[in-house]
Image (cartoon, rainbow, N blue to C red):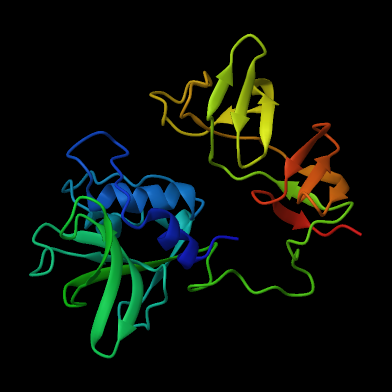
Length: 251
């Protein structure tokens, strides 16, 4: 499961311009996190053009479908999405993820807060107008495991799903196949569903750089512990266990 530390490790010092407009803005990073980690989607800022609209249009922009609103006076947890209105910290509003606190100093992971890339900066909490917590997160760590929760230890019979965003690293047009190192090899493009416009358009035509998923729930029928791979019955192939999410326990 996603943790805040994973998000930080994978995005820190990277630059995101997902809409190709105005360069690497705080909006781009927040929406990248929404799409790639929080099970959500991009939030348009149609009232003012700035991220204060995340809060001001929360009842109509869809953010509450994958985020819970948290009181601005509540204790922040790593990964919380924090929005500032126009203020000394952010003249045109700003959005970032809460990282940590050190006494009276609070640190936030965000983009365009001094650099056109993702950085961790000390920012004042003054001017915050809204805080959201992803429904698929529990603070800075993965959701707690309970007896009824899959334990992510894959065994024969486990039911698994693929992540929403896998990247097409190579394309074999004659064989209609896509290569992705996370799953460990080539797979038929016929079972891939494009999930973003990373390669120019979300048109189900996969080019190098396209992001895709393999929809559905699959059954583990064999496990190779030494290679950390599992055989998925429905696909008829071995897949690396790392990217898979267990949704039902096996034997």
